[in-house]
Image (cartoon, rainbow over all chains, first blue to last red; front, top):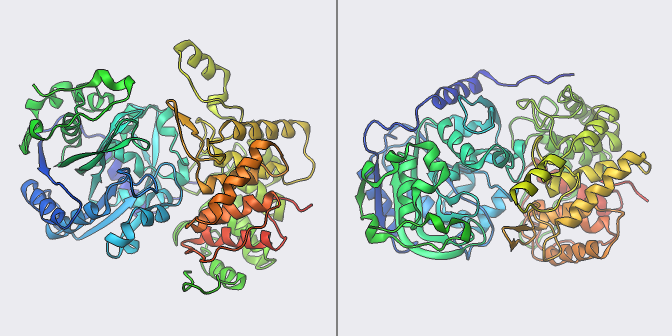
Amino acid sequence: MGSRVGLSRRQWAPAALASLAACRQASAPLSRPRVLISRALVYDDSLYSIVRRMLEELRPPVAGKRVLLKPNLVEFDPSTSINTHPLFVHAVLEGFLALGASSVRIAEGPGHRRITMDLAESAGYFGLVPRFDELFIDLNLDDCSRVELVKPLSLLQELFVPNTVLSADIVVSLPKLKTHHWATATLSMKNLFGIVPGAVYGWPKNILHWAGIAESIVDLYKLLPNCFAIVDGIDGMEGNGPIQGTRTFAGVIIAGSHLPAVDATACRVMGIDPLKVPYLTLTSPSRQLEEEAIQQVGEPVRAVAKEFSLLPPFQHMRWKPA
Amino acid sequence: MTPPAGLAPPSSDTLVASLLQMQNRDGGWGYSQHASWTETTSLAILALHAWRTSEGQCRRAGNWLMNLVRADGGVAPNRAVQHSTWVTALALLVREVTGLGPSEGSLLNWLLSTRNVDSEWWYRFRNFVRGVSAPGTTHAWSWYPGTAAWVFPTAASLAALKYPTSRPAETQGRIRLGEEYLRIRVCRDGGWNHGSSRALGYDADSYPETTGAALVGLRGASAAWITRGVERAQAYWSSCPSSYALSWLELGLLAHGINPDPPSTPPDLRNPMEVALALIAMAARRGVPVLWARG
């Protein structure tokens, strides 16, 4: 009566690709990674041109590619800054289509709430993203394939990963700029927790905590061969994030193809020292997280930096511009 | 499955037909239109059984469930996954209610032998030595092996263990511990969220769907804290926009003898699981519960 692994030939290909991707040395960019910071003051139509200019500047190679956007959807309350703003997500979607992507879809698997579509509706996605119900995939309930982790840092030896993620050519992490009461800050890398399917691991995806939060973040990042990140930092969350924190205006969008560099830059914008954030130092040698190691373009960090309030356990991680 | 505003919700016949249409060729049901999953398949069997229909389709689904049994006696969430998880509780409920699916003995043994890691002595000792303040817990149930207990899998396990009117003492002991876990994890507003009612000194609020599910698991128990949970569910009932959450709220209230008025605007039913849950709730409202034994 034993079960068998039900991988079809179509599912084997992406799973094998992901295993190969896990072999990549995430910590060794060939050159200084570029991170672009742009000012953005409000969630209105101006976002479309701002995001488009950012993508034209960074030129991620997406022509003819299947792009998967991964926002951060957490809770219902639309009056907080808890979720990635739907207008921001739609501006990114339009931006990638303008760059020639063959398809752009949106996908997320919230960590606590099972009712993803209701959550998305409450967060304004149905109202602000045309054809949202056709474009969106609930990663918690997606069909999935087993992927063996190569040299994992966490206690995980394998992960079941949604086939939608495995079949995408590029996964674009669209986090909110938020503090996090376990991981210090939740940015483009921590946002990848949402790709782990709740239908297998539950709500919350507690296995990632038991396997080591920081280490699991790195393992998930290493799993994905092609990533890009655009951080929604117009309104952020400080204090007891990622759920019960306080809205704070930061007025920035931060983007790049090297997620550790994007997150390190976003940390500095929040007044957090990235060299003290465990998942970042596990991903990249400290020298690659130094400011000089990142080719930072657009607005200088110092011009947009804002000290996000931190819970007492994280106050020793404060970073101040020189 | 969205009814026009102001019109009656879909009839049970319509929902049954819709559910049957969504059955996969392998006999199971998926969360969407793709691969079959144990959770949706179990709920679909229970829904069809409640409405006394489609025996042949239920048998096929029961056979599909039997193929998901692992060597340890538990059930995997789908064919791609090689580990037994919390869905074993749903398979046990299916077996108790319908006689379909894997045998009761192996499922019951798995459920009784499974414990959440955070209740183990070595984990508590380690926290004590490290000075870590962890939330209170008991032997309850986790979503996935090797992790902590949470509200929903504990509620599902309680429902499965409580279904027969008589259980041996060992089972009664686990039931009491599971109920105690739910007592410990009550949120400040009286309801339940996923199971983290207080983190880093900050209180968290409940969710409607987990409040309803917890009340189903607590059927037959009475205490002031359970009454508060029922009141919380009643407060959610009038304003909840989610079909999934409404079905669990209704089942939770019915499990404690309260029959709420149907919602004025029936919400969308987005997938087979929501259709099955709506059917289970409708049947319970008409006096045919399948998540607990009558009487």
